[in-house]
Image (cartoon, rainbow, N blue to C red; front, side, top):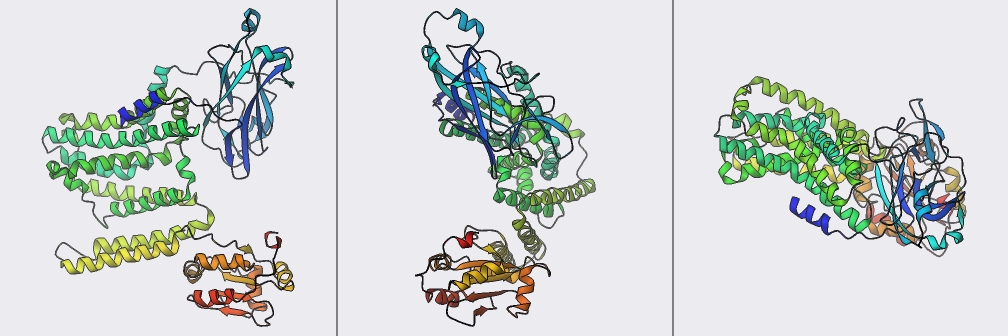
Length: 592
C-alpha cells in the first residue's frame, strides 16, 4: 500500500482547477474564491475575490484562531514571477458563542497579492506565466467550525496586458494582519516530527480505549509465548494501523488528482450513516466489555498463529484501533493533517504515513522486547474490572456520537441500539458450550432475524424521504380542499412505534409516492407528539379520532374522508389514489 500510494503521488498529473472554487459550505452558508489580474494603486498583481454568505467567516489573525495555521492565508507561487506580501482588507469583529470577540473576514471581500517591487523594477522583457494561489484556513458559522481546508487556484497573467486590466482594488488594509507569504511556521523535518508525535498521542485517546483491553490481554498472553510469535503478532497489529493511514493517503491522492480538492480530517463524521454505525459499533464493544459475548480473535492470536487466523485478527484489530481514534483526534491531528495537505502530493503522502508510524511504534517496541513483556502484570481479576470500566466509558462515547445525529434519527438509533443489545444478549447468554447444536442455531437465527427486523423498522433507509410531507396547517388544508384537490393527512407521533411501522410498510412504497405526486395530492404530516400541538387538537376536535396512528384521505367530491387506522392498508390507499382524477394541478401552494 505504501509503494502504491507514493508511486501514485509522484505520477499524479497537475491539472488546472476551474474557477471559481468552492472553499467551504455548511447548510445554506457557502464561500468561494476566484482570481483576476488587478491593480492596487499603481501596483500590478492578482485579486483573490471571495464571494459568499455573511454567515460563514474566516479567522483573520493567528492570535485569535482556534489553532496555529487556522487563520486565513493566501500565498502566490510561480516559476516566473515573484510576489510580495498579500494585502488583506480590514477585518470585522465577531462575537463567538463563548462571548469572545475575534477578528474575522466574512461574506464578500478581496485579498490583493502584488508582484514584488524589485521584480517589477528589474523586468526588462515581457513575461507571461502561470501562477498558483494557495488559500488555507478554517471556516466557521456562528455555531460550529468546519474542518481546515486547503485549496489551490491557478491562473495565467501576461504583464504585456497589464494596462488593460480592469479590476482596481481599493480598500483599507488591515493593521497587523496575517502575513500569508511568510514561510510555514515549521520546517519539513519539524512538521514530520509533529505528524509522528500526533500519531503517537493517539494511543492515549479515549476513543481508542475500547480496544485497549484486547490489546493488553493479547500482550499479556504473548508474554508466555516464544519471542518470534510475540514479534510477529505485534507487527501484524502495527500493519493494521498503517493500513488505515495508507487508505487515508490513497483517498487524499484520488481527491487531489481527480477532483482538485483535499481530504478533510473529520469529514466522515458529517455523514449520519457513518455516525450511527460508529455509535452502534461502540455499543457492541461495550457489551463485549461487560462479558455478554466473547470475541474469538484473542484466543486465535494466542494459540493458532500458524493457521494465519491470528495474524488476520491482529491486522483487523489494528485497523479498528486506528478507526476508533478518529472521533477524539481532531485537536491533535488537525494541525499536522492540514499542513500535510498544503504540501506537494508526495510530501503529503509521506506525512500521513508518518502519523501511522507514530501510532504503531509503541506496539512494535513492546512486542519485540521480551523483558518489557515479562514486567507486565499477569492476567487476573484486575483485567476483568478494567474491561468493564472501559465499557461504561465506551457507552458515553456512543451517546456523544448519537447526539451529533440529526434530531429525527437520534431516537430511532437509540431504539435500535437497545434491540441490538437484547439480540447480542440472546446470542451470548441463551446458549452455552454444552447446548445442543440445533438449539444454538435456533437461538442465534432468531437473534439475527430480530436485529434485522429492528434495523428495517428503526434505521433510516433510501426510501425514507420519497414523499414531500408538509407540516400540519389547517388553513392550507382548507384552501386545498376548496380547490377540489385531494389531501392526505398522516397523523403520527415520535413516541408511536406503530407510526414508524406504517412509514416502512406503507409510505416507503415507490408506487404510492409516485401516485401522490402524479395525482397532485397534498401530503400533510400531522405531528401529535405533544398535547398542545395543532394537529393533536385537530385529531380530537375536527376528525374525532381517539389516537394515532391514523391516515385520512380527503377526496374531491366526497363528503366523508377515507380513514385507515391499522398498519396494513397499502393496497387500499393505492387503489384510492388510482381513482383520483389528475386533471387539475395544485400548483406551488403546497410549497408555501
